Image 1: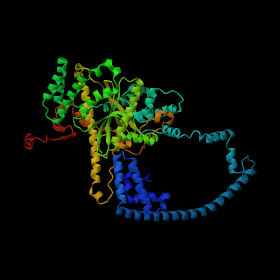
Image 2: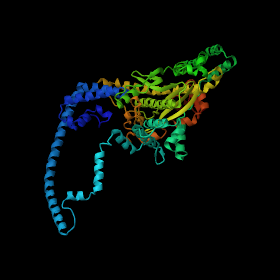
Image 3: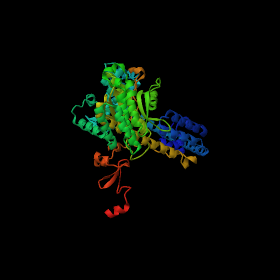
Image 4: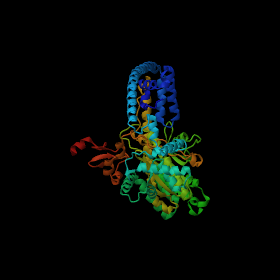
Length: 634
């Protein structure tokens, strides 16, 4: 019903009436019935897309608007006017058709006479030409050509499988990521190669390796794997290609998360505690020291409590942490007794995120997979999730998959699933962000644990139609007190990761608050349609995710729809310049040493001005400084 209208036009009664009146199945309907169909369609969209809060909220408000008396009267008038316009157009076309038909008849008679005269003269000249145009067409086709044409027609049904048609269409398309490599682009290459593997895998023509399955699922999800670079180079066949080296190094540098300096008191306390434990091997003395350290604010106190949590984990799980006992424990023992408490303590520093343990599935992935496969009702299952709770839904910001001593095949399978889970989380975040020209594209994070070892990575929407997965750190949890000293750097990275996720949560909250403010505006109270706030520009660069078929049966697998998106839906240049939303001036002029000198409110002296590390803004003077002193110094 709304296929040719943008979301913003759904509230434009004149445009809606014009669009529907031009469709034959609605043209003769009454205004009341058509308006009822409009309301029903909007309600359906709201229910089927309820995981996308901005869209469902807008649809619910539109329903209220269309049911209002003011909108009903306007729609009735607009509909009658459009029906009259369509009738005028119809009679105009009919009159024009009659006039052109009379002229065509006369012209046809003249042409027939000319053709007959030409054929008569050629036959007299003795040429071996056919007597009619139809015979000429048959004689121009050789028996072999006729056989070929016949085969094509007869085989059309046999080769008309929907997936094969879709794959053939995709193989003729190009992605617009702009990363040129070996005569194509990186986004195009990973998708075309993945499509060919998919075709072989589904037809069961040749055996497919675990690595090929990984490449296929990543490629069909528009994911470039920069965690296992060697595997990706084998997939793309681009060893030592100079363009690939430049692309790889640039993306790795762009998305490497720089660790923000930790609180000085936290660093000092960690070092003292590590020394005490190494010297005394007594957890009680170390905990006593931490409790007696005076913290100036809540954040510092909670960070110091994290040190106590790490000490307690090592002190209270000697059996679990002993490598010889690996066969007598499970991956959930490590999750619930080691990694879970550690992540929970960091989340409690600001209490923005919530931890959800146990196998559960984010709603976005579940709904998307159900649309692709009718017989399934669950998406990717995750062992642990870090969630931001808005008033309307859960927003997944980190996914974690745990194993104990997994095989290579199991770890590869978990990795592939994690990448796609993290991509779904990123897509969900982007779908909830509203138009903001200065908005940085958020990132989504994942963790994969294998006993005490863990890998932390992030996924970024790098270019239109291309997601980049990067490795941020390889971590090992300390198995004894002696190893706690070396754990300060890894725990600092995890803290920075969760603080970054909290920034993503803040972006989501700002967008939802903005929607709520618009919903309660005076215009809405007066029955006027709400002004549409467009989505953030990044939403046009997203692509669908590949989901595993039911029971992992290749014959039931389906290629994602709109794998290449639409090339004209966004400004390409805008997304290829500083695609991570970073501020190059800030990142180049503010060093880690200067960041350590920021006060409790984020202000520090930099480049003869003051810079706030939280707002990324400069000021001529410190807000707490005396204005008179500033003028005297000048």
